Every structure is written in structure tokens, then in C-alpha cells.
Picture 1 (cartoon, helix red, strand yellow):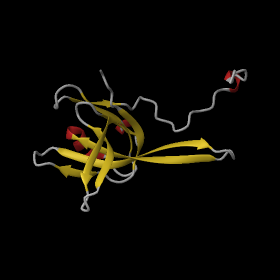
Picture 2 (cartoon, helix red, strand yellow):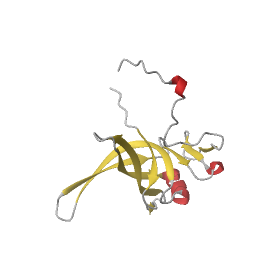
Picture 3 (cartoon, rainbow, N blue to C red):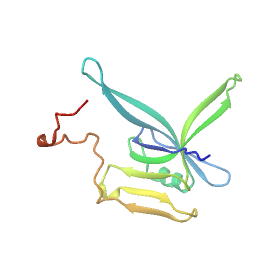
Picture 4 (cartoon, rainbow, N blue to C red):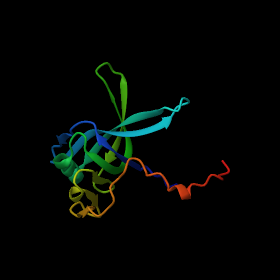
Length: 159
């Protein structure tokens, strides 16, 4: 039976990334990423909710994240969910859900800032075959879509 574990997020870093270097020389970069959503309550007020995600980036993507990401940076990423567990000093089992972004299956897109600095970072095949795609001609991400033109609004919807 096939399964799928894939997460796609677009948000802002909540703090500067922390870098860990393993004895092998490979790196792990960790940071928190905030995503926002909202709804109108019964009184018609807009309620905004922020969800915080723990992100861990590994390998060559970690080196890129370490070099370019800072608190407030807006990024799009693709990774997978992973739950780590450990025992604290009192013997209590603790759990932490993280989004892992790895070279072979992950993706990072730097969004915002100067358009000519936006880039898509992915890996195809071997660990040395990374590609950077300039996305300066790509439309910027807008947090709120524009309203439809008045002549395109359909008031005869059945719901």
C-alpha cells in the first residue's frame, strides 16, 4: 500500500535559524515558521490565527538556509512530517513534530524582498546536482486576492 507524507508551507521565519554541524560535516538548520489563517466570527469580526511550525533543513539546503534566511524571511517550502521523541531529565517522554526538508525530496523558495533575488532551490538526483531558478518574472505572492469584477459576480448560486 502506497503512502504519502508531504507538507507544503508558505510563511515567515519567527527567529534567526540555528545551525548544527554534525561530526560528518553535514549541517542541520532549525527555525520556526509562522503561517496565518483567519475567519469571521459570529459578530462579523475577522479573527486571525497564527500557527507555528518547527522546521529542520538538512544537507546542502541547510547550507543555503544558513546563508540567506533571517528572522522575518518569507519562504515557501516542501518537506515531510516527522515526530521525534525523547525523555526529559525527569524521565517524562516528550514529543515534537517537525517538518523535515531534505536535499533529495525537499524544496525551498525564497519569497519577498527584491524580485531579482527570489529563487527556487531544489535538488534533482545526486547531492551535487542542485538548481537555482530565478523567478524574477514570476508574479509575487499576494496575501489577499483582488475582488472579482462586478460584472462577474453570480448572485444566482444555489448555496
